[in-house]
Image: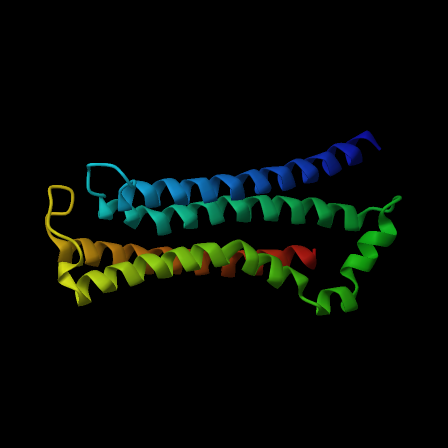
Length: 180
């Protein structure tokens, strides 16, 4: 019984860690955007290439979040195999009616949408730099606007692909664990 309580405490700890990760993901996005665009009132121009780190940062956060989700799912699978006071809940969770709702798709979408949105914004910024070359002036931080645009667009595509790959692998692992 003490081992089961320890595992339940681990689930709670993983959920708390996921909430903290989401918090720091937002803080990190804001910090990278502030550095990349330049802080208002600062005499220094922003360093736009720093914005290319945003999609990679969000993909990394999604990867860590996926690891937490897999650990939670593994512990839940373990509890589904055991008979105990929570057995009815585990059977209810595994029932066809609950699984048919595909609630986990909504949860996954909520987790990855900020990453996809950030990638889209970085890509649009790169596209704007190409379409409107005078939008930024060359500076020591941004010597070649076209190169900056290409780096931004490339990192946005890379971040979106990584995030989509992480999401697809998480889906496959979740479904495999559900049928253990």
